[in-house]
Image (cartoon, rainbow, N blue to C red; front, side, top):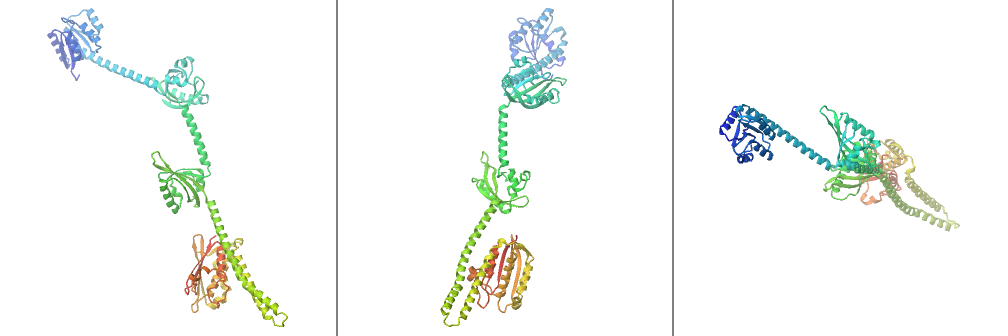
Length: 626
């Protein structure tokens, strides 16, 4: 023993105490001893000295060992007691042992004392350990019972043989409506209380436990209460095995989850309704997180953009836009974090590269701490509507333009027909006046004829302009620019020869176009013939014709180094009918450029002109590719 053993010696003979101490030393017992010889000192030593063992003589002058044992018992002290005496009767030894003495040793045979002390002290230590362990078990058991009885979960212990109840907590009784005694007396098993549709499932769970294949499991199924009502229960099961590993009981914690299941079912139905609404919505529904990444899209938005949900989830909103759209969307998202949502129009690119125009109604999503969590967007494909709106706008603009042209045309008809009609009317009156006077009226008839021809020319010109505005009824076909230029060069062969004009072409960027053949011919003819007419004297005429691509348009350019036009002076009248900007010595009626503009716009194009006096002219005709 490492620490000294505290020994209380109750003896009135110093010689005997020395003998005891000597034997202890021989037995290599390290001891701290206290010798007392009376009752008062003995009682005091019990509390102050707190001995590990007591060695007592049989009798003292006013005290004895039997009284000492009774004091120890009354004080509820667990201290080993050895009676050491010179002589002792059998009766006294028996009495001492009955009163609690651990052993009796004669002083004439003290050699046994060390070994007996060690044995008694070891037994005491073992006894204390066992006592503490038992106390710990009892305390744990009490705490466990307290927890079971006060837990919202019921506790049931089932016999593994027939799944009958062994123990049933009060909470379990409350859940099922049975008392433990009622359940036992009825002979019911756990299976009887299971709802019929869930019975096979419950049996499978129980058999797995009883067989020992699993040591614990969890299950949810319906059970009957005593009153016949059905409740949902959640079971937490575990097995209790004996030393051989055989299952001897099943311990279950059970919880009534009927309300939770009803809430879950309602939530599921609500989610199903929500999902049905979302997935059948005629609008695309799109949500992004705080990093602008897609975390949900419905089926409609997938159909609009031609992607699957898997392809879109995790992608940024900008991944489905062109560069212009990305910048616009980024600015929108930043503003959404500060201001309420609104509706916007964006262009998206589908998986196949098609451009889609969509109207988006957006709302930012914030958490309870007002932290930005993302955004929700309702997306409507307005591509067809936008196209229809644009077509309507185009038709309105076209109608307005045609109305304007009609007003101008009406004015032009009134103005251009007034002069020849007035002349014819005057000549007719003069003819009637001079008839019968013998005057030769041949010159009058000749003038009437000339004015009638002028009137016919005006009507023909108007018919040409009217026809030029009706391209929609004429079929379009593939036209080679080079071929048309060759035809025109043959028709204007004399004029080209006389003017010594050099005509060059470059149709490498666009060799052909799908359009109205007669219009393309007329446009090229008028521009080339005008270039020849309005050339500069003593300057070799050069005419260059080329094509270029400009987005959805083909630009047909006809340029020359002729006399040019003062656009500041005549630009607003350049394409008017019968408008001429050069001397009368150059033949022409002034309808060529008007016809070019009318035919170009009828084909859905536009015309631009660059010119300066004595520095040539370039006409750019922009025509749709298709």
